[in-house]
Image (cartoon, rainbow, N blue to C red; front, side, top):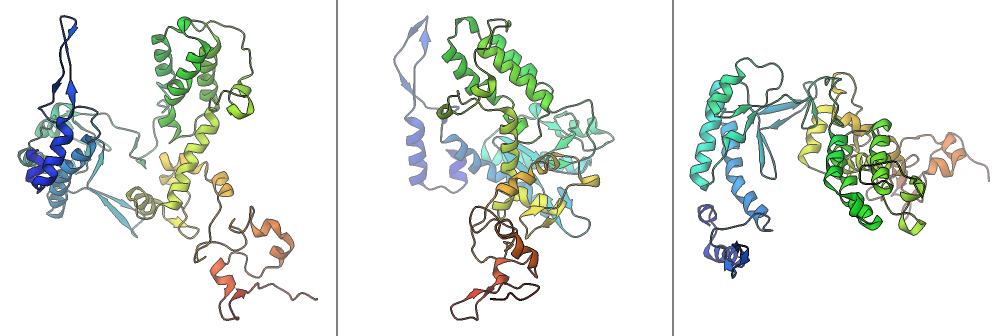
Length: 400
């Protein structure tokens, strides 16, 4: 509550938050016997729904300190360039209770960062655990151990792909799928499947096993060989015994993965789920407006097609997360439909905005004779003809 008070919250808000915190009650076991319940007196407990909001309010203090340090030239941050045309400056990123700060590999910058952390601790009353913090060098950095000592943290590994921004060709021997299969097998080893019914196995398969590779599938294309191995683990778990011993599969796996309305069990096919998760990023890019991650991609790759998507990731910029996502951009755009507003970002003939298909597909002969095949809906609408009408321009006139 002292942190909130320092940030300017009045008594009304402080009392409301304190009432939320103090309503929690606990009970403990003493010699195996539960004692009576008692109220909390030490603030938020882990998992409290109010905790994320208070953390965001508190971490805003750190964000302000870092921004002021960057403005004063004490920390450099990171610039993302598209040639020499556009730059997006990144000083720090926040995700849940993790913070990433960008700065040059200079001793004075790390010293300034340590001062910022000290001031944040003094202002908020929070304690930063530097023993769990890491310095991650981008490229070869001389004296990185000395820099870590200056900040009081340890040196972390160099990632092949960092925050979705390609830094160079990754090591071919390292795969994002390494460890996924091992993790699934470890999870299977913890379950005593011989004591589980078929319904229990299906529940665990859908709620746990199928979700283990979701993070990787939302960023990278899953190879068919990996998908086959992971689905084999799922099949053996569903039909096999306690040690994944071979047993007859009573129903074809394709049938098992169908929707329940179609006679299946609703288990998701990994390849289809992978394509859907990657395609969702394509839709998000087109739908988002000023999101920071979109601005970074625009600065790095540029835009095309009325700013609906980035240019292709090729050459030195073609290694990384976004290139993997763009592999699924083709089918995603073929299935995407538009709702016409001003019509200045929708192609009249080749975008799906009028009915279930494009006008070029519905009227191929007219499209062949169209004078301007890439014109927009706005350009095809003539506002000067009465109440308005379409001005369909063709290469030749039509006879009645």
